[in-house]
Amino acid sequence: LRSSLGQHAAFVGDHARARTLFGEALDAFGRLLDAEAARRDAAQTGTYLAINEMDDPAASADQVRAALERVLGPLAEAVPRLARSAEPGDPYAHHLLLRWMVTVRERFPEQARTEADTYLCAEPAWRESAGHPWPLILCYRALLLPVGRKSLGILERAVDLAWAEGQKGTVRLIGAAIAVLAESRGGRFPALDAELDGLEKTVPAARSRIDCLRDWREQAGGELDLFRRVLPFNFH
Image (tube, rainbow, N blue to C red):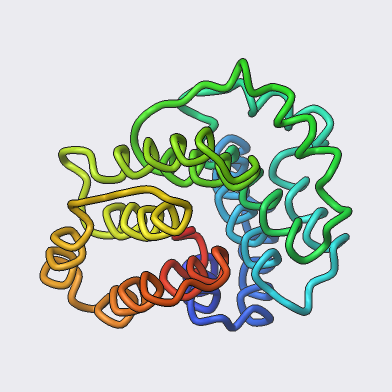
């Protein structure tokens, strides 16, 4: 319950309350007798806490990194392993790592440079899979690379995954946001207008966010700003 309330607080930008609630949840998981259940629950809530720290303007670089390593372990080991992984148990940790690299590059430019270089050096061994959160993994990979044909191709594959048959609601909205971002880099998505129209019907509560996507196409701003406005908290 505390972890769930923490997520609600994080979604509306109440980072201090989210931090407190996630901390209470993690303390409670630490008292569980079932060690494996405790590990799984702590990993999930620890991921939420790390994302909340990335999004909190008041959090320090060290605070963000500590929350990340609580989930992933030492980054010197986690980065080369996850860069080459498409194992079923790794996508959320992989997404968390890439989200951190791209986010801290904006806020703390020196913080993730070594880790990003290590990740990029593993590019020949990068693998990918289907299903959420792989569209976001591919998107953040593209944002680590220089603007160009290679990064655009990765963004286009990310949209294809998010709009694959059977994907619905939030995942398709994530795909639409990635498509809008990719358009600003020269991509072309003839189905985007129809996709946005469809999302207005299937996810009516997201109407204001869909309007943000339409507006951003006309007057582009920062790429991460787009994600923050349209895809709050762990939706990006």
